[in-house]
Amino acid sequence: MLPWMRDGFANPSGSYSAAKLARRAIDEARGQVAEWIGADAGEIVFTGGGTESVNAALVSLDRLGAPGAAVVSAIEHSAVLRCAESFSRELVRVPVTSGGRIEMEAFARTLGGASFVSLMAANNETGVIQPLEEAVALAREHRVPIHTDAIQAAGKMGLNVKALGVDLLSLSAHKFHGPKGVGALYVREGLGFVPMQHGGGQESGRRSGTENTAGIVGMGAAAAWMRQAAEGSLAACRDAFETRVTRGISGVTVNGDVRHRLVNTSHLSFDGCDAAGLLILLDEAGIACAAGSACMTGKQRPSHVQLAMGIPEARAKSSLRISFSRLNTLEDALAAADSVVKAVEKLRRVQGAGVGPVVVYSR
Image (cartoon, rainbow, N blue to C red):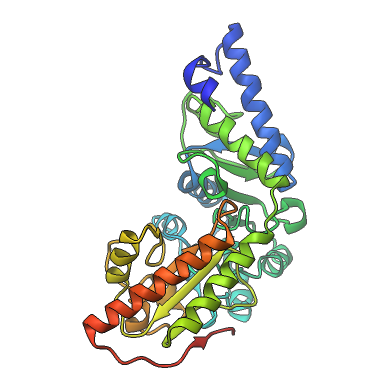
C-alpha cells in the first residue's frame, strides 16, 4: 500500500499516465479478490467497508424487489438489521436454535411471501456457521434473491460464490488482514442493481466516488495472501485456549454450536463474573478481546445475538468473544488462556461468587 500512499496519489479516473497506473492497480486488486471467492472480476464492486457493502446490497434489493417481506435471521449484524428496519416493507426475523443456527423450518415458511433474504455466513459474535447452502437452495426454489454477509466468515472458511449460489456477498478487508475502511460487494452477473450513491459513475456505475487506491490495493494483497496462508493453526489455537480455560476454572460455558463454528472464534461465559470487569483485567494483561461484537462493546447490555439464542441475561453479561488470527501462535493462545483464568479467579474473589460446572452447548 505504501507506494500508493506516498507517490501514487493520482485519481484513478483520470486520463493521464499516473492515473492509468492507479487504475491498473485497482484492476489487479479486483482480480485478486474475485479469484479468492470464485467470482469474475466484473462482479466485484469496491466500497468503503463492510457496512457500506451490506447497505448497498440491501438497498438495491429493496428498490428492485417485488412486494413482500425482507427476511433476515434474528442474529444478523446491526448493519443488516438497522438497514432492513429502515425499509417500508415488512421485516421478518427468523429465530435461531440455542446453538445459534437459523431454524430452517421457520426459514422455509417465510419464503412464500418473501421479496429477498439476507443471511450471514457466520455470526460475528459466536462464530457459529449458518446453513447457507441449504438456505440458498430453498430461496432458489422460491425465486427469492439472497444476499449473504460474509464479513466475519472471510478468511476463516471457504467462500466460493458460484458454489454457494448467492446473488450478493459482502466483504470487509480488515477481517482478513487487510486495511480498515475498504470493502467489496459481489454482485452476480445479470442481477439488476440500483446504486446507493450517485456521482461520477465509478465502479461501473455501481458505486460512485473516487476510489481509495491504497486501501483497494491492500485488500487485493490480503486476498491473494489468504489464498496461500495456512489456516490449520487457527483451530489449534482456539482448541488449546478453550481446553486450558475449561480445565483451569469451573463455571465456564462454551456458547454456540461447537460442531459448526469458525476455526478462530471462542465465545465463553463465566459464572459469577461481569464481562466489563474481565475486559479491564485482560486489557491490563495485554489481551485484546470483546464482550460480544466490537460494535456492542461499552453498551453494557446483552447483545441481540445472545438473547435470540435464549442465553439468560446474567450469563450473557458474563460472556467474552476471543478470536485468533493467522499471526497468532499456540504460545499466544496458552498465554491468553492463563490470563483469562487469572482474571476470572481475581474477579470471583472480589465478588465472592459461587460457580457451577463447565457446560458446552452444541445443538
